[in-house]
Every structure is written in structure tokens, then in C-alpha cells.
Length: 356
Image: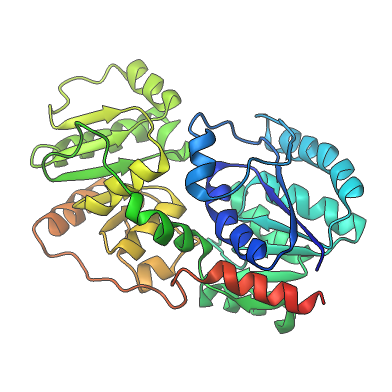
């Protein structure tokens, strides 16, 4: 193989591309990194790329925000000339963001082989835009690299040819393992036991009624333990508009923080409450209890094997499960198969062997 092109669009994609990029570099393969600019992230500084061990992108398409249709179309329009100019042998796409499906569609029309890293995940909830992205990307991909065995089962059930599917493990865990020795908690935080909270899904933070319910329950939990909640500026503004009163002094709202610092906070937390898919995986690997404020998950292995439990929008259940965990009665989890830090190497081995 002479040339491979990676397409990423958001900070979690860079966490996933890093171990794959490193594995191909060790094989001496020429690589091109394209950042669509789907999400702007202030923490993607020079030190961010240094920590991950990847170069800055060769191309930044600077697409920016927009509706799903606008953003996907803009990525396709700007990416096509890059594919035609660089002529990669394989294009790798990651996860389930709009950049992933946009790149997959462009490459399928240009007859460029596509590899989907994190294939086969399903929430079975088509109201989630990410679910549509996952399904469509898997339909046109030539190489489907699954992070867990349920991914293989989903793809086979959907009629994907078995020879296209490779169970390689979770590339995100490769990055966790590599950066864990550098994990650090920001100064002035977490001096006592704490619960770590992250919320970003529109169904939780853009609906005033739901956000008020969640914050009310978290405030009750904060009566007994400190809560640390890195808050997105959009969510902070929503909270200000709600004019919430009488929040516990244990309830600490902080600005978003960098990945290494957040990893440190996760590692030492008594409990993590989230609606993030990636955090469900990271807490499972770290052995940290996790309660997910969603009705479903595309990562069921974190529930069946790991430390995660879905509480949906049932605030009584959230309160009950949180107290159970904080009193030492939470379930014990295990690390899923092949979450061992070698997933990037497996992907590189498969593609370099196949493309000779």
C-alpha cells in the first residue's frame, strides 16, 4: 500500500485516528489527514496534536456548522477535489459524524475503497442522526472494522458479506491506554470525592423542561457529594435563562477542559453521569461506574460487560442508582474483548496485507 487517506471531523475522531495513524506510520505507509472542520474545538491546539502523536491535518476543509443537510453537502463538495487530487488507495472514516457519511458517499461514487472504523454499532433509534450515518456508511464501506462483537452480529444480520467484517477492538481505548500515564486533574478540582457529569445531547440540554428535571436530580445528589460539571457555553446560557435557584454549593460548574485533564477526572470519579457514547466506553475500560441519561445506546457492550447502566429520562431511577453506587453497591464490570490497546495495529495489518 502506498497511500491512505483519513477523514475526521470532530475531536473524538482524532482520538480514534491517532492509533491507526501511528500503526500505518510504523509500516512506512504514506498518509494524508483531512479535517473537514465540521466542529470547531478550542482545545485542538498544538499540544493536543502532540499528545496524540499525530501531525496537524494536511487539509482543513473549514466546513463549520449548519443543518445536517447543509453540512453533509458542503463536506462532499469540498472533499471530492481532495480525493481526486491525492488518489488514495483506501479512505478511512471514523465513528458516526456527518463527515463520516459524507466521505463515504464521495468515495463510493469515485470507486475509492472505504474503511469504516467503529463499524456495526447500532442504537436501533432512527431519530438519532448518528444512527442514520452509521447504517448508511456501513452499507457502502468495503472494510468494516468493529469495536465489539455485537457490531459483527448487527452487520451480518443486515446482510453484509462476512469477508468485509473484521473484529479489531476499540481504537478509542488505544488512545486511553497511551495517554493514561499523562492524565492529570486540573488544579483546584476534585480535592474531595466527586461525581463527574457531562451532558450534550439536544434532547437533554436544549429542552428547558428536561434540563430542569436533570439539574434538579443532580442537585439532590449534590447534597451528599460534590458534583463537577464541565458545561458547554450553549448549555450554560440555557441554565442562565432558566433562572435556577438554590443549587447546592457542592454543585460545581466549570468550563470545558482538555482531554488529558478530563481523562484524569474520569479515572478518579466515584461515578460518572453522562449522555456521551465515548464516555460510556472510557468508564468501562477504567472500571468507573457510569449512569447514562439516554433510553438506548449504540454501545451495549458497556452495559452487558462493562460498568454502564442506562437510566433514560427516569430521574427517580437516576437518583436511586446513583445512591446505590455511592454507597458501594454498584455492579462490577469487566473490560470487553480486544480492548487492549492494539486495535490500530490490527487495522493496519489487515489493510497492508490486503492491498499488497
